[in-house]
Amino acid sequence: MKSNKTIPVQKNEKHTVKIEDLTREGMGVAKIDGYPLFIEDALPGEEIEVKIHKTGKSFGYAKSMKRLTSSQNRVEMKDENFTRAGITPLQHMHYPAQLSFKKQQIKNVMKRIAKVSDVKILDTKGMTEPWGYRNKASVPVRKIGEKLTTGFFRKNSHDLIAMENFYIQDPKIDQAIIKVRDIMRTYNVKSYNEKDNTGNLRHIIVRRGYYTGEMMIVLVTRTAKLFPASKIIPDLTEALPEVVSIVQNVNPTRTNTILGEEAIVLFGEDKYTDTLLGKTYEISHRSFYQVNPTQTEKLYNVILDFAALTGEETVIDAYSGIGTITLTLADNAKHVYGIESIEPAVENARANAVLNNVENVTFEAGLAEEVMVEWSKQGRKADLVVVDPPRKGLEEAFIDAVIEMAPAKMIYVSCNPATLARDVALLIEGGYTAEKIQPVDLFPQTSHVESVTLLTKN
Image (cartoon, rainbow, N blue to C red):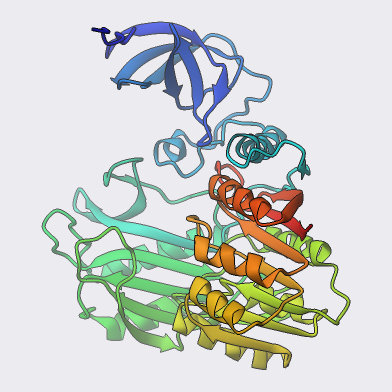
């Protein structure tokens, strides 16, 4: 009978280790007798004194106690709390090294999962100033001491760390959150108590147009009652003149999901506007809109470059949201068909087409895989299919429909390298070649990477 391999470390032991690699989340990896330890705030090449704080059968976690040597890619942190909260897990890494790390993540999964080693992976497109870029903040509200407090949860917990400056958000959004918080304190609005499902104010969400400066405030509450709303709303609009919309979203359930089903418009309409590559978009409190506007423009320019449209093409844009990619492609295409499962987003997209005087687009409401399967059965054809799916990637039925439809090109916009590689492998089996991948850093200081992949029909 084979004996179980013993774990070479125990909780609370101290060891000196050398960091060999990084996980895809940006944690340092060290090994003791072949046993991997994952360590926050650690970079390859560094020698660190660590304390073991958790062990499992295959790997463990350790805490950095003393750094004995420092990597040339190390920079000073803005705030250790941001690493503890998981907001900026790469803030200790020199920005060019972050860009190389993200390119390597894509290279690794293409080789390991897609079994493709010859695809051209370009250097990650980064930012000149990789801070203060987020145009949306969703900040939890809890009671600390006797005060309603805003901040962020400690990683893997619901313990709130009080914060006022998030550094990666538009500074005007950080300032707005503080003003909203202070007005709520003035009127003694009760913060949400997750344990008892009592209190009222759960989250403060602020969205701001990068180019327009228009601001939307969303107050997520447990109940529809917000007292005294008749005083709160005038105070908010006076303190924040840029506000064009205040929405109360009601979420009565015990859940990690931020938004509930019911929405009450308290000021203006449920929309604000911003521009992207010269087009104006109306954005509701539920709408998905990329959080990094300047990098989104770089991303969309990559899509346009890979598409190389002549004006004669029929294009399908799946997971089209409020129509930003669809309308961007429409300038150079014969016709673009957008597919989106969320009805309000489809309504937004149609309104945005009218707003921008774009007539060569059609938006279809439905699940992308179901619509594509139906269209392929009908014998519909497209010259180009563009996809921008959620993190889980594409459904196999969608991939089968693309293979059946056989467009000359497919452009895959991905926020998850692992599911991208899985789907690329299936598309290669179906007769496509992965030509090149362009990573774009939409989320500096984090381990997330967006990418654009060009696939062509053999």
